Length: 153
Ligand code: ADP
Ligand code: MG
Image 1: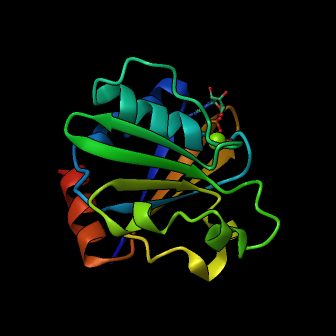
Image 2 (image 1 turned 90 degrees about the horizontal axis):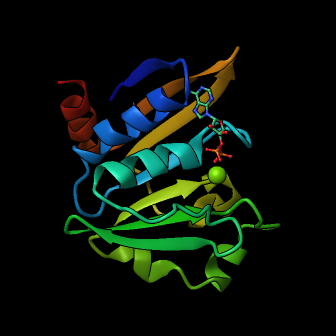
């Protein structure tokens, strides 16, 4: 598998990357979104949803754990585990069914769920660099590799 590094000079670049990702999503895909608070994880998801035609406000799931969106024939499950104090809270939250189906799962703070989180297909790391961001997109499954290849073409 492989990693792609992208420079995102401004918020619009992050939204556009979300739009590009939206075109390569496949049912059941799980994407880990890594990066500090304010790195742009939620902005990236907003870019995906908006390019899929979602007109509403994209809320951060920080308090709700998951925000569910049905858009363009896809179910998008947007998670944020920032508030977990221990990984077992993933089990207590009863989120299993979201990860078992054909929905696309986008997970902020995946490390907070420890090994309870199912295996991901793509990992997207965002880092603040100067005024902008760098994105590191890694394929970590065969399905992820196929999506990342599509993204680059
Ligand atoms: P996170 O979900 O990672 O905590 P958010 O997406 O909520 O971060 O917030 C990121 C902040 O950084 C927002 O204010 C957004 O406008 C800004 N931002 C996003 N992408 C970029 C970028 N490429 N360059 C500069 N600012 C960005
Ligand atoms: Mg966020």
